[in-house]
Length: 418
Image (tube, rainbow, N blue to C red; front, side, top):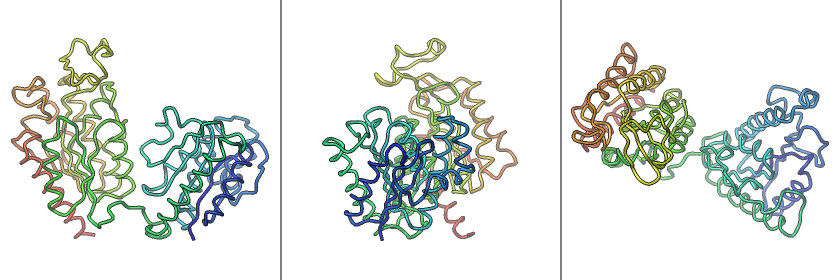
């Protein structure tokens, strides 16, 4: 039967969770109640008590109470909730999850839900949902619903909001349970059965990536394109780590330049890591490593004002990476790719890395590009990753098609060897 997990602090939100449980039961789903409270006494009996959640995080509830450190307790119970939800999903007892709360409850639920695969219904009703929810949602498919009033009892405002939440998660869970692959199976998109490919793209690499996408579509794949906006790269990494992709075509790495140089669209230091850890075949290129993105021109840091500056649009100003920065980027990329456990290839477009870096373009700098290529070659020497030079620009359609064909061949070889 379809099962919805309710996860929250039953000492402070016991009334609300009791109301939600009854509403979900009337909606025709089973309910598993998980208690993540610590200090107060629970007002409701949980199916997974707080002591069990604490143990899932590697500690005892008594230790958390004795320490009387609220921040540490929230972090620990979030870790325990994550492990608990993953276990329930693996056992086939989780087809959807719902939480209600303020900042702490949303933080606990957010971490736990982010660990679940893409497609598993995840809904949080929160007093925080009208603000910046990036820290709660991350790169997952969590749905946030604003509570309008604080989660403090059932009243004429909270009742319809919570009723909508219960009916919504019940409906989503029922649909998911009909299409899910069974207990513990991955929730995979691509319902038509085509293997999924992840591709990274920026405006300055669109032509080359589009050519690759069209070629991969011809070859029978569904291509998901991620804009390298920081959030896009983080999402690509998350999904690659979940194993939903047959291959990754990572042609645009500008988020690594932002991470090195303090740009605003960094995806963090773990960018270009997940596919390698998961053993997923990947073809990598160096798209848009010739620029770093900042905000509007008036916000450009003083240190960048004397560089080659270009207004990309009213919201984005870019600077050209230097030879020294390109050398360091080559080293970092090589280190990441050396650690890959699956088939890895690097396609190097010798005539330029973006529309701005094309011959005659404002960021055309053969010396800086050569520094990048040289550091990358040196760093990959003796590794399993293969490097291929192309006497083309990254936006040459022939380059995109060649990268796509190479990934297709790698996926086929990996499948044959399995």
